[in-house]
Amino acid sequence: MAFVPKEQIGVGAVRVSEREKGYVREVLESSRLTYGPFSRRLEQGFAREHGCRHCVLTNSGTSSLQIAIAALREIHGWEDGDEMLCPAVTFIASSNVILQNGMRPVFVDVDPLTYNIDPAQIERHITPRTRAIMVVHLYGQPADMGPIMEIAAKRGLRVIEDSCETMFSSYRGKSVGSFGDIGCFSTYACHIMVTGVGGLTTTNDRGIAIMLRSLANHGRDSIYLSMDDDKGKHGEDLKEVISRRFRFVRMGYSYRMTEMEAALGVGQLEDAPANMQVRRENARRLLDGLARWERHLQLPRKKDDERDHAYMMFPLVIREGAGFTREELTYFLEERMIETRQMVSLLDQPYYRQLFGQDIEEKYPVAKWIDHHGFYVGCHPEMTPEMVDYVIATFGEFFRSKGL
Ligand SMILES: Cc1ncc(COP(=O)(O)O)c(C=O)c1O
Image 1 (cartoon, rainbow, N blue to C red):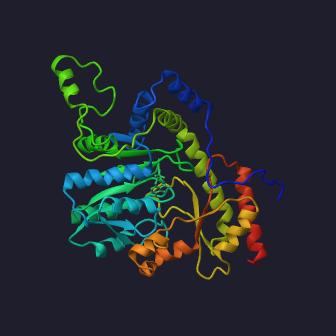
Image 2: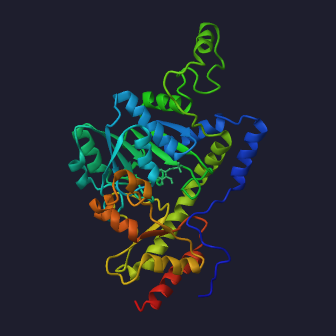
Image 3: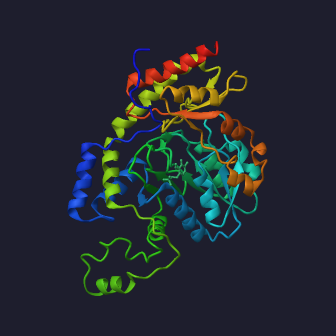
């Protein structure tokens, strides 16, 4: 093995391009640090890329999810204790926001190939109090939106897409974030677009977009949701804005993205086509290189040709009877400068076991398998072909050490 990395090969990486630095400098020189021209550009560009009419920026994926539920709750008159279906495998924030909105998450086991909510299991969890489905597109692979949207329409349920891990990816030619009532995205470090922290909320409904913007701005009256909304107004129009601009019509939050983050986001959006190509190329190289050990490891293949995969990460699950443990394999990789993370888990988290019962995981066998046997490595655009080959060779070394 000729190539030895100088630094750890991370699960994610951040590189701020010269273009992004220039945009941030422009913001700093303009002294316009909150919602301004870059925020508008990012909202319009991101919405366009995801086939949505509206996008509202927030300060995190979690804030986006939080106001998505709050908006639907207000529109549809949901009550405390109403239920929302949620996959049994996801990052904890997807489910926390349901609880934080006074609702009850009802877990549904996941598809063993995509790790996303299994449509075949949804209906048996629906009760008279079910109001919505929180669909999560994990690691870059869209969930089975065809059957999910059919069930939602048939049973009168709303749909929120937690697409915090998936961007620039589609199912049957339609973008993630454009299927449900609202789509939520994250630009936290190691995600597909990175602004440090940040979130984007998409919708095709103008009324929902206005409500989301109000919720992210303390619940403000829709007449003044940006500091430019009084500009160019005269006479009666100006009087109307002045009289209402400090009115608050609902309980809202302070969830705004800064203009510096939006400037980074605009640069990231412009570079996204090139970055996505490298990400997908790295994933293809890993898939080809690891294929010979596929009887021991489940690789992140697309479930079918109906969907893309954005490969935010490269998740792997150790198959039953593989003859080694996740811990053995991941320690081996880590000792050789390859960072790994356990796949996101929910039901084995101490807080969730406390809330829902110590044995909650037993009811969700696929989730349990993933929680205990799944992990991921990176395939981000900062990984060179040499680094990818090094990762493959290191897996090979591990399998040889096991006589496999
Ligand atoms: C599936 C999922 N949902 C929600 C979030 C929360 O996003 P943020 O960290 O931007 O609040 C994440 C972030 O890692 C995530 O992976």
